[in-house]
Length: 161
Image 1: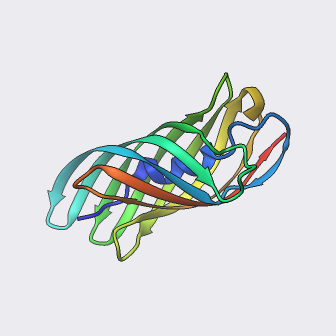
Image 2: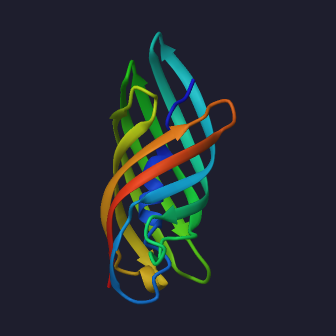
C-alpha cells in the first residue's frame, strides 16, 4: 500500500529556494526524493494516525538555474487519515552548502486515488542568502511503504530578496 509522507509533501517545495546567492523570483516546480520514517497507529477501521519524518536526499527543479537545486533536509509532522481524507501538517528545514537554510510549513489537504498526499507549502523563514524568502505552492507526495522511499512533486514560486 502506498501512503504519502506528510513531511515529504510540504517540505520540498520550500527547500527549492534555498541556495540563492542573489535575489529573485523562482519557479519552484520540481521533484524531491528521499526516505521516510513513519509511526503508524490504527485508531479504528479505516482511521489512521501517523507521525511522519521525511529525510530529503535530493531536490531537482525543472529550471536548472533555480537556487533550490541540490538542497537536502528533514521534515516532520503528523497526519490523520480517515478513509481517503487526509489532514495534518508539519515543518521542514532545507539547506545547501554554507549557512544558507530555509524553513517550510506544509499542510495536507487530501489524498489522490493512488494514495499520494496532496497539500500546500509555504516558506516561513531563512538564514544567509535565504533570509526573508517568501512564497509557496502545492505538493503531491507518494511514499512506497515497502521501501520507505518517496517522491514529492512540487509547484509554486519562491522569492528571495
